[in-house]
Image (cartoon, rainbow, N blue to C red; front, side):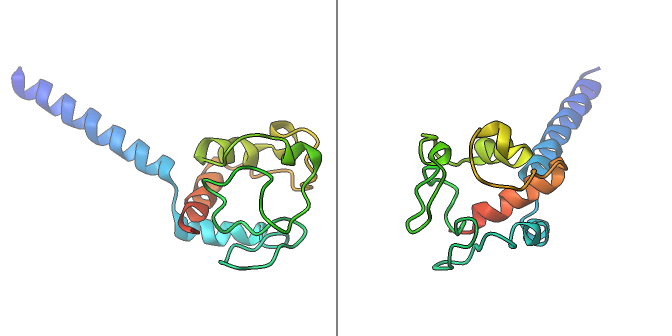
Length: 125
C-alpha cells in the first residue's frame, strides 16, 4: 500500500516537472521561429530598430521604451513590463492585448511556438 502511494507521488512529481519543462519552451527552436519576427525586428545587442524595435533585452523592459524607436501612443502608454506572461498574451493576439498598437503581425497561434520564442527572447540579454 505504501509503495503504491510512493509510486503515485513520484509519477505526479515527474509528470508535473515534464509539464513545467514543456511550458518553459526551447530557445533553439525559438531561434528558428523568430525568423518570422526577423522581418521587422532584430534581436542582437546593439542591433538596429526596423519596422519594429530591436528586441534585445525585451524581457524585463518597460513596454514602449526602446530608445530610438517611435511607438504608437497605445504601446508607449501601456505601462507594463515585458515578462513571460505578457509576451504570451501579446504574441497570441497583439491587437487585442494592446489595442491601438501598430504591429501588423497577427500573432503566433501555436502555443509551442510562442513558448519557444519567449525562451529565445529570455536568453537575449
